[in-house]
Image (cartoon, rainbow, N blue to C red; front, side):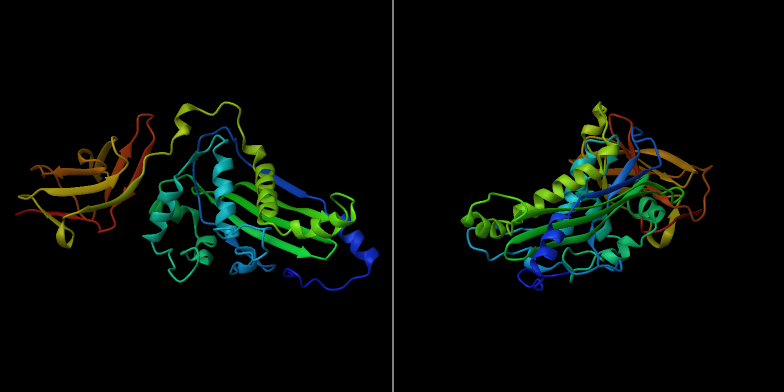
Length: 340
């Protein structure tokens, strides 16, 4: 990958042929009904090298010092493209988990790396098991992996070429099946082979091609074309909002045991003004929780004389007005009922 201003000297004719031959390439593989409202989580994207290994973004593309030409790009290419993917998928029939919920749950589940930018272990995320993500970290049916395979600007003096490459894959959590995969590479040139023909413009147009706006607009067009097969004409009303979210949950059974003489208290932080319940395995189900403050729920269970269970996990669940359900297993451990 050639950095700005360091392109090797090439014969004029060969250079002209190279710059004139840039054609966008797009490939799609669709393996499900895009109108089916499955719930998906768009995971943080990663910029990768030719071998597919996660790489640090090149700062030359994030903060430009070309006076009056380029504004500062406030986020990494990976973060920028991830936002593009999330926004484009709002035009599909998919039920999207809020990015804030995805990020918060990943951070609380061992996928964070505070030394990185963004603060995630992207290698671990890219190699994650979708079933693990959707059952333990998020309540979803599938995950979206995004890789930036190319994000480059080459300045040749008479020409500037911006190039973008992206790979997007949607994988089912239930069986690991690839539901959708799309890859693309495209470029935008400014200078001799594209632009005004005046002598001054031949000099200035390649410099204008260094503007971050050129490569970000190219990325927008590229991602839009990549996800076009998933777009639907009439998006259902309930998809205009994110599914209900659970941010945190806990119970007060110390040591994993519950006495018949004391109640089990379950608390949770979730989307406000929803119906919320908790269950103990499949033994004690759907005990209502009350919203005491906005988004703060509490529930109580007092064992009956006929109740009996051992090493059962505790789950909380929240339901919105459209019947969408989000569940979370409380991480403080399973509980057993001990009789006095």
